Length: 307
Image (cartoon, rainbow, N blue to C red; front, side):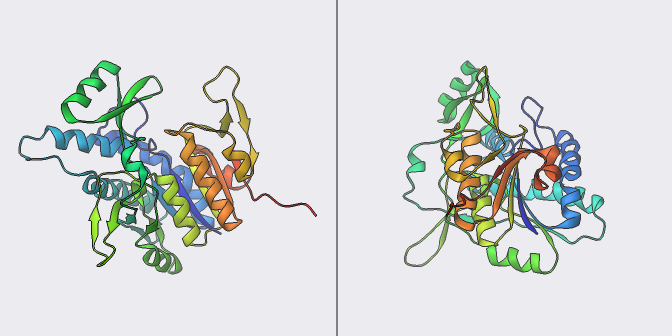
């Protein structure tokens, strides 16, 4: 079975943790343990988030006096793909000796006129108290929004149209390679209508929507979206959240989940199932093997017509 695994943005840096390199190296062992069993039995493609990491690099770039202007988000996204890809390769190499592994810096084409450029919604960076977030926003010209108990920077998140390296990924899978790609949703680029020339854009593409598109293009059998909760919850954050263990795409969309958290995950799972007739699931990182085998998480399945 061919499985595309979308790792949550906090897989390497949990909320509240210091963004030190050794912290991320320690956390990567948990990721490897979670996916090793699946990698022994199936073809695997791994995508990952980069919200904490790209936010850290953006802050460092904005504060660097040697620069006349901060590095743009597309180049910072490429840097995070290299860093996180390297951490994953090293850990998986040790856990699965002899398994060919490749980490690719990949690019995702978006539309230059995507309305998302006018409405930033994608959280990046760490969580701040409101006053500090507002001060940073004034200093750097950032947009900020409330995220749980604090405030974070938000950036545009245009919809992915195409992953440019899909054929390369397909070829690697055919050679038995475990592929790490489309990190942080891929480096966002637009293509000139006349020449096709690529231009990076100031945005972060949602990694779950990119994973869904990649899984569709690769004809994957299963899209596995891993996060920090056991399953999707209706009424999450209320006094009476209800687990959603099984849903069709339409049923999942009716949940009206938060744009900055479960919303893109639910939409990604719904899109993949709707377009392919295959299965998707959302659940906790540590339960990855159990989710694929139907013992945990939220299963998203086609709406089978009766009669």
